[in-house]
Image (cartoon, rainbow, N blue to C red; front, side):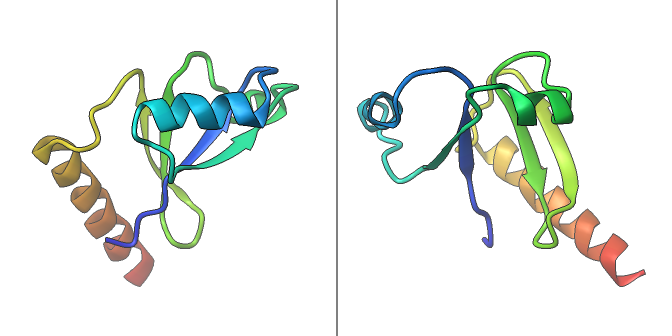
Length: 93
């Protein structure tokens, strides 16, 4: 449903290590970026991991979840649909 998931690794592990970790957890298709110096984490004010940000198609932040989340549950899917509707309503006003 028009959702792109991107992972941001915040440690000094190699890209190969991160890919192996994701593959082991059946997340091999997840796109991964590295923030080894913590620059993006500082800009976003990330104070713990995992932190999930939901962005609309224009790149605006429309939701934040701090801590672990089970994104494949009906509740999470309902949350994403709600954010998508709220974002579309705000964009059209």
